Length: 150
Figure 1 (cartoon, rainbow, N blue to C red):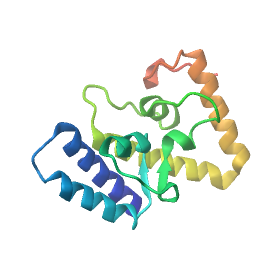
Figure 2 (figure 1 turned 180 degrees about the vertical axis):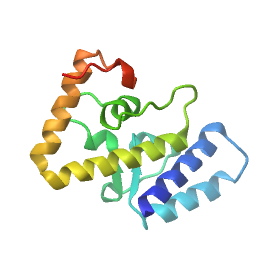
Figure 3 (figure 1 turned 90 degrees about the horizontal axis):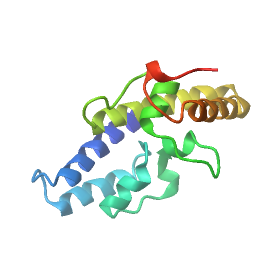
Figure 4 (figure 1 turned 90 degrees about the vertical axis):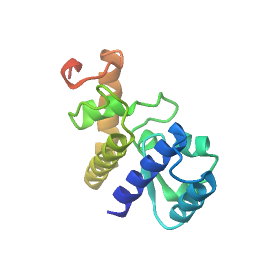
């Protein structure tokens, strides 16, 4: 539950920073984020980029990034939209890029990853290899209806 709350919180904060909304001062936003960083584990897709943008250091042990969880070493990073389509059979980011939807999708991907991990590392590796195979077959196009499954 804590991960879900914090990923939604971070999504909201990143929207404020991205759109330069005058909801709070930048100093207050950074103070809030720093407080949560050391209390909770942070979950997101592409979290490192988000915090790099905000110029905030997050200890690696506090981060669960679905970009890294669903990736083979030295291979391409897979977009959240593609992962959602393949792993969750969900179509996201259709019209507008929504940070809240991204955070919820990252949470679902993380739960799915943990579910597979309980079955063993081999199951996770097999699923990720299958993911890369399908991605290459489909030229990494996204959308549930567009995926050809082998």
